[in-house]
Length: 168
Figure 1 (tube, one colour):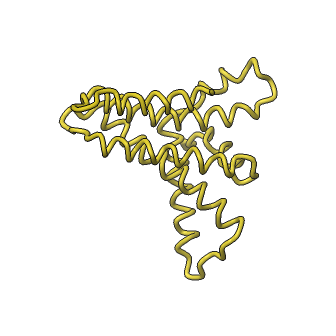
Figure 2 (cartoon, rainbow, N blue to C red):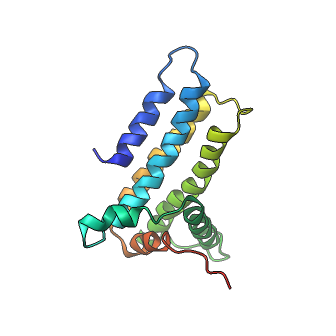
């Protein structure tokens, strides 16, 4: 099992750790771990394309949470516009691919926000149901990614995750 899947499995374990009264620490770590599972999934998928395996770890260190979130937010907005066009897209392979990419991008943006809340907002009280919904969303994003990972649109999306904003 790869590292991202391990993190998602760990998040599931933490969410169910205490049977009757889940501790906030367990629920918060479950949310955080599930975000990191998706974060590392996208990174590992990108760096696996790098020809020199010995340099993949160095390349992986170039990814930034904020930058990836901006790219995902742009992709989400572009795909929402695609689906909300005055002439709706016809069902088919492109429609399905875009639906899956939208799910991945949207989930990433949402989970970064949830991770920040879980890690830094002590006033927020998490319920097991709420946490499980977040974990299910990440699991669905994993499934969406698996269905499109080898398509050119998905590979192009991965490359954009490394882009940085240029300053004048």
